Length: 422
Image 1 (cartoon, rainbow, N blue to C red):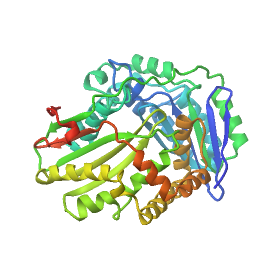
Image 2: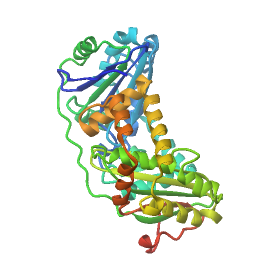
Image 3: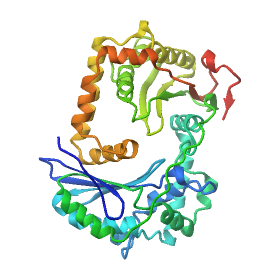
Image 4: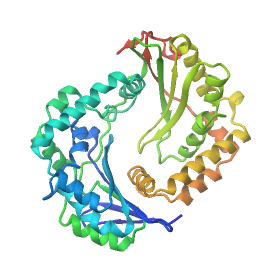
């Protein structure tokens, strides 16, 4: 486990670097402040199209020439668009990173966004959007997100048919130039790297790049409550969202452990109570997604229409029971959750690609990157009293429940008002 060097480059980008002993590969990731939350209101889907087009040529290289150059440098690459960022990730042999950096500089500063690539890209994005009709579980999650998350993070990320149709080459180039700016961009590198040399090379390839991205601006959250989307199938999908601590809150590690007690394997409570004891579902899980300003806990159940109502009832009961004396976490449950959570942190820490992702997330949420030692030590420090004291004061807040299936369900008493039909 190494140490993390953080510095600001001449352009204003933040660079976090973590050399890793015994690793021959290196990963460099660039997170640009350009996610779906910044898409123009009438052009939702701009970030989805940029995700595809940023790898289609840069600088003097056409799409094929850029792909060939990256292949010659042995680079595995990925461009992914999220709600707050578009991230370019590159992994190669550490000794060849100098071949990679000029290509990265061109992709960041001089993407071609050629007009002939716009229509094929739009078609791909339209197909992805249309494909949601064949993914009822994914649709349930997106429906719940739209009613739970604050604006503009409530967007799907796929855009809309109208928004995609409105995006032309000029729109995409103008949008990229307005938001892909160095002050607001985070770069992370991990693996077989030399920190000072990397920083100097990045300063060279980024040159006189300048500008400051506007800060994220969050609006109100959605209406929450219960809603149902009719789907004539033999399955019912249930998604539940609830409030949870933001990442900077000291309670975030306690929420992670509580989530692991609920959904950390075959001995976890939700698997045991919803699936094993009652045979109500084929899939059940819970997760926790902390952000800078807020956190969201979620749960999912996939089941049959005949067992959907009981599945929802038991799910909600278990999410509430863990907050009561009768459902207090046991020492055995905490030990199992601690081992599982620590293992996931350490396993991820052995991958340069995972470390760059974790450092970027930390910097955007906390303003600094945490080492593996800091993460694992914080997990180890939690006592049983700490966890149960937190759960005793924990509130799920206003729930958001979304179902997709043949018929609506009866929501918990607190949500019982006429069901919304999507």
